[in-house]
Length: 392
Ligand code: TGC
Ligand code: FAD
View 1: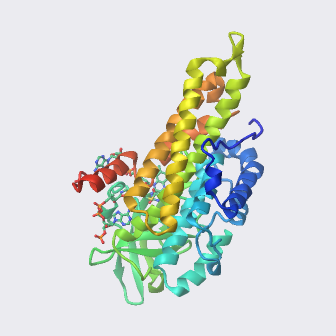
View 2 (view 1 turned 180 degrees about the horizontal axis):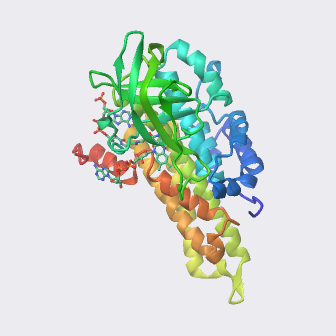
View 3 (view 1 turned 90 degrees about the horizontal axis):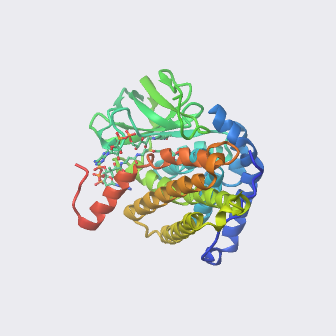
């Protein structure tokens, strides 16, 4: 793969809206991605392997629990710093950002928000340091966009619960030490349970043959009469709203992360367009290529402003779930379109692993589907503005 020459675009001086701490955090993440991710990611994606050697580095740049208080091992940062870290990581690869998103927003966040003090102390510092890796089980084979229909369930068996069911499409499941699993009680109420690797009847087979997110491990979670100690139930929130609150946090991170993937594609295409000569001049001198590049930077800039404003609203505790849906949907769609146009600018070279664009493009096909599909987020906006539910 070519050396990483990335230069971040900032067409509207958005850096002026950031604090010194934001810029420091971003710079540490950017340098780390250049040093530790760019040189190895193409080979990891080709081999369809999650590069476990980067776990320690992810912890060091604060990617595991950026906004979790320091007393529990987190970085204690604000939402914009969290977003910037996700942006920089996804500039390297969406699969690596996935690992950080799951660990932070789908494992540490529910333990922090809905867990007991004992659970927080037991798990959060180890998750923040990467000593423990986690995964999040919501989706089932027959319940993807409609998680409320889940059939995974647990029954009270005296001093423990008995958990049965299966989850599918679970990021990090093949190597996770713990899983935050959403399941129905005998009363049909959804609760979160912490299931640990090694519990009898719990297995995590890997899902193979993905053409997308190849550097991220995906698998199932299978529960065959698993005995889960009662102290592993998250006590402080139940109902579908609990996992959906975790998704709000992860979707916010994705809205920023997708900008990183788009920036990398734009930056690569811009450099290529200025260097590659055809018909005696750089291809960047042709109007058709300039149109693509000009539209890319316009859309990236709009997405940056949307993410920044959403970050300030989240810092003030005012962002709504529907606002997060709009940003996730818009920014991932934007990144996919930028990746497709950038790939065309590189001509034949665009389909090779010499450049990152095709990998980003294939990764984004997962990102546009997970954490709520493109269609589902549109319906969330539709419901929010009309008050009319078009889901069912
Ligand atoms: P509905 O009746 O609308 O809501 C049920 C309860 O949840 C509350 N709620 C939310 N709370 C917090 N945040 C949100 N975004 C919320 N949306 C809804 C709602 O107020 C209600 O609360 P209560 O107290 O009244 O019970 O639920 P529904 O069954 O009609 O479904 C709504 C729908 C379709 C929007 C929702 O289920 C949905 O978002 N579906 C998409 C599923 C999804 O995103 N799955 C993601 C799985 S995890 C994943 O993909 C990880 S990818 C890994 C990586 O990042 O690498
Ligand atoms: P479906 O729900 O079957 O949807 C299929 C199509 O129907 C979509 O286009 C959808 O938009 C459309 N559709 C569905 N309902 C409606 C409706 N009411 N109106 C109009 N159109 C509709 N899940 C986890 O729990 N944890 C994870 O860590 C995780 N990681 C993932 C990693 C990868 C690589 C992938 C691909 C998925 C992951 N997921 C995870 C699952 C992901 O969240 C689901 O794939 C997603 O929510 C969509 O569910 P589905 O695939 O079952 O599609």
